[in-house]
Length: 321
Ligand SMILES: NC(=O)c1ccc[n+]([C@@H]2O[C@H](COP(=O)([O-])OP(=O)(O)OC[C@H]3O[C@@H](n4cnc5c(N)ncnc54)[C@H](OP(=O)(O)O)[C@@H]3O)[C@@H](O)[C@H]2O)c1
Image (cartoon, rainbow, N blue to C red; front, side):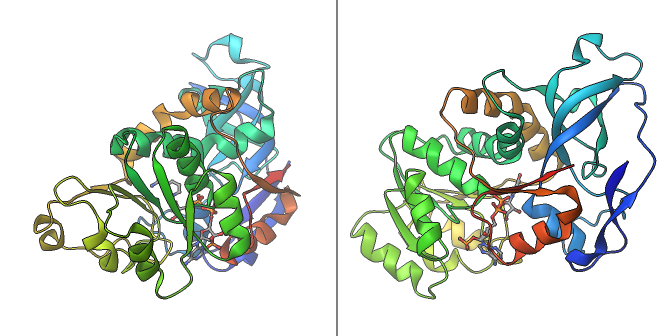
């Protein structure tokens, strides 16, 4: 079968299309004929060797796929054969025509959803639902969604808007700002402008932000600290697009009565996995709408990674084996 092999860590060109052996399902596993493989932002960091948790070099790259179950291993419910599912691998193997995954990681796609929409919502929808639960966003809150035109940011914006909160988003440039507004952001700031924190001050007048969904990290939060509601403000740190997690110290938080919740790591991802079914249901019900930038042939995996890194994607990039 055709698959994308990662030859070493490095630039997008380390992702190479090759013929490899077909996977066989182990006990408790399924094999899926993949029809849509989402390209995930954290995968670009793993490929580049800059992800905080180092990963072993996978033979076949990739974490998630959507398609049809064509084979099952011992102990797996035979009812899954022929089902349309999304699945997560344990760290490798999804950029391929056939994908082996633990049956526990599989979620059946509701009849109303296309395989492409299910693939595109699987990660961002589950992460956004988990962030919303963790933040306990309440009607009347003011929420800052950093990078509101990303996959996760778009879902957060949609969920916050539906929850009746004031959503201030950030995005890079006018086209991404439009996407954020289409998702329900009431106001959008350009996070590529060096003084965007000043623009937030102007926007808030004397008000404050109750919840910050922080995906940029680095030093971006430092100028925002005095704009967050004292004693009640919560920061959820789930990404580091700037290259490092939020650079905040305990003193920064304690003196203002703010909480910072780390939203990464194994336990967090367990919570995210438990929201997978809810994310598909929310999409089938129209509460979440995935944005798909493009569907590329599997062999174009390197090009897909380049699009994400160059910030050229307006929605999820899918690979079609
Ligand atoms: N903790 C978790 O469970 C979890 C799970 C999935 C993803 N994440 C994190 O969530 C964040 C968004 O992921 P995603 O998959 O939703 O992203 P995505 O849809 O691939 O969007 C990437 C976008 O990020 C924006 N961006 C801002 N600063 C950037 C920078 N310095 N370099 C490159 N892009 C930058 C760009 O949009 P603009 O042009 O608007 O700047 C770019 O188009 C990432 O940090 C990712 O690692 C966390």
